[in-house]
Each structure stands twice: as structure tokens, then as C-alpha cells.
Length: 149
Image (cartoon, rainbow, N blue to C red):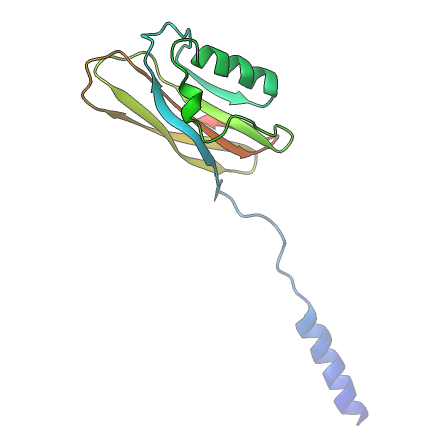
């Protein structure tokens, strides 16, 4: 009987050990919420230059909204405009003012050990107006560096 208990104890201790590490494997895709994929149609009069932005506070967000809405009230079509910047941040990509119509979309955000990498896709379509494409998404707040491809 002792031998059976001893064997069971040894087996239990051997098989209950788990050497799998509780570490994240990278790269990982980050889930994001699209706020807007659209165009500014003020022929550049909004004053927004080609840029990649990380917006992490209400003041910067309100300033950008004011600038974007200076010609047309584009934020009426946003999925949301009230952002909890304690939990989230925004990533925005603006192309330069282009003729002949373009769109830009943030297609993927990949997390590596020390950074997040934002991937975009630019598409041309036929249009007779000057437009400035942009894409804005929301992600969970992070302290990692954000890079743009």
C-alpha cells in the first residue's frame, strides 16, 4: 500500500509540473475600432499636412476635430467622438491633398515586443475634386512606441 501511495505521489508531482511559460508570443495583431475612413474636401484649407498621428489626450483630439470640421462637419459621420483617453488612444493617418481621388485605410496594427507597427493601404479612384484622405482608429492605450509602415 505504501508503494502505491509513493508511486501516486511521484506521478502526481511529476505530471502536475507545468513548464510552459506564461509569455506573450510576438508578433500579435491588435484589435482596433475604426472611427472614420474618409476624405477632407476643402482643397487643403483645413491646414492638415500629410502626417501620421498618435492622439492620446482630449485636448489634441478636440484641436484635430476643430481643424477637420473647419470646412465641412466631417465628424458627424464618425462612429464616436468621445474617447476615454485613460483607456484608449487614437491613431490617425492623413495623406497629402491629391487630385483624382484617393483613399487610405489603416489595415493592420501588429504588436512586437517593444513597438506597434501600423500598416496602411492607399487606393486611387477617379474623382474630379481635390481630396485629402484620412483614416482614424482607436486602440487600447499602450506605452509602446508606435511606428508607421
